[in-house]
Amino acid sequence: MDPILQLIELPFVAEYLQRIGGENALTVMKLMVEMGNAVTDEQVAEKMGVKVTVVRAVFNRLHYWGIADYTKEQNPETGWWTYTWFLVKDKIKEAVIGELEERESELRQKREELDQFMFFVCPEGHVREPFEVAMEYDFRCPACGAELQPLDVEEEKKKIDEQLDQIWRAKKILNEI
Ligand SMILES: [Zn+2]
Image 1 (tube, protein in one colour):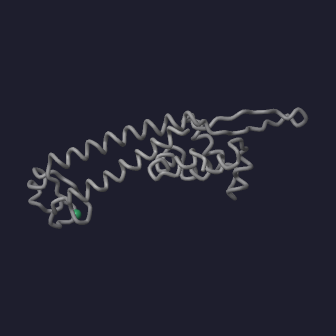
Image 2: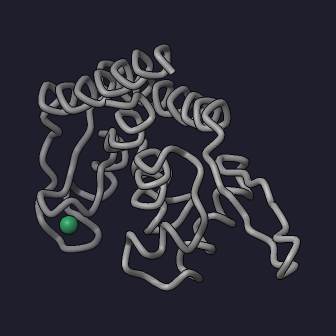
Image 3: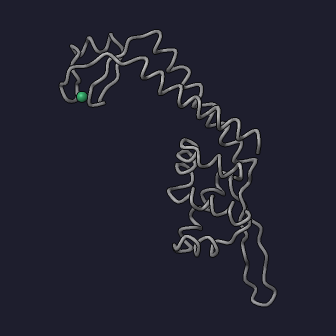
């Protein structure tokens, strides 16, 4: 599989690309790769079964981030311009690396905190507070009144490690691009 496709399908990379490119960003990007990374808005719109304006909106957002770019060509007879769009792989790499590094340091910090502090959580997920704050709340959730429970540290670490593992996989893919 094309490494770009592998990369953009990783859950948090996909989430990031959708955040900057909009909800259709992933579909458009996948099609661009599959169609040989030289496409017009009409071609992509036809494949997706959506209006051209939907695809153009994605192109424009990706262009803003430098992730997509275009070449334009004028038809000498009609005078109309055709825009051919492509993904800029180096920019995708750069953007993803930046995002990965930020995530990784956040996760590592969170993991360290788990060893240093005791956390209490609402069983309904409303709050996650260190011991001192939980004590101020009388160990009751300020949102729903439920009794706060000590956080399952091992479970939490497992979740963090899974995410760190995803980052590691993404870095491996990035090295192949
Ligand atoms: Zn609650």
